[in-house]
Length: 218
Length: 164
Image (cartoon, rainbow over all chains, first blue to last red; front, top):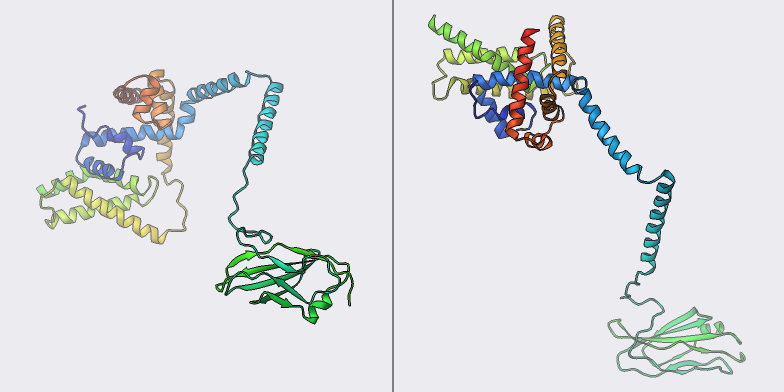
């Protein structure tokens, strides 16, 4: 039978391997080419038989393939005894766990780009004047050194590190109100801190926390 | 009379081709295939009688185009109507089934007993679905040799089938 240039398309067409354009071309072709159409019919019959009865027809070939795979697996697994395999696997798992743990431990801490609440801004600092040490009586006012013009100061009073009172002023002294005086007791550890803010509300300086104690209450 | 002969020739020549095309497109076991084929043939005959086939393309192309259009219409209609109806399993006539079954058994036996070099090609190419190039690499032969072995296996199968 003489060959046609579309001969090579027959199997791919029947097995749906042709692209759409090639498929349409070939479909139109076999409306003209008796050779291709007859060959395609015969191939179709053979292909249908193989697809439906392939397991029976190729039983030996399939068994041979499975045997090859089983042989390969057997060859690998017989390299070590089961006990040795178990031991090796345990070692590998342990190694992975150790590596991961080491990795976590050696991990450098992330650099901090934002201040925590307790962090102090370096640079300018506010000097506290009074009270700065133990006093005999309740102080009448808090006093600190002036920084510059147009600064707002926030004063915070702590009892054993716990904030008990806060106030804001533009002066460098703040008289204690009766309300605050009532909070203060003898023999208790108090501390106070001043923060300075610009007119825009930016923190520009912080004083250290200074402790004081009252000897007696009048 | 002459025209009737020509039309008859066209039907005889193109009906198997149209049938194959239709069954492949709408499903080999779809019972509607015969109706669709008949509609296409009727359409072709009408158009030829009305002189709608002017010979600008070949008769094959003319029939191919009519077939493609009818198949597309059928698929479009079916998609709308039969969305939820399951596909029927088999509509072969009992006598056809028997004939096919007997032929299938004979062909299966023949293929099982094929020489290994031909059987292996069929196994890899058709059963496993490898490409011609992959089969060639696997067997250490050229892709052309693969095609030749497939052709030969087919020829052998045909000869042995006739003998049986």
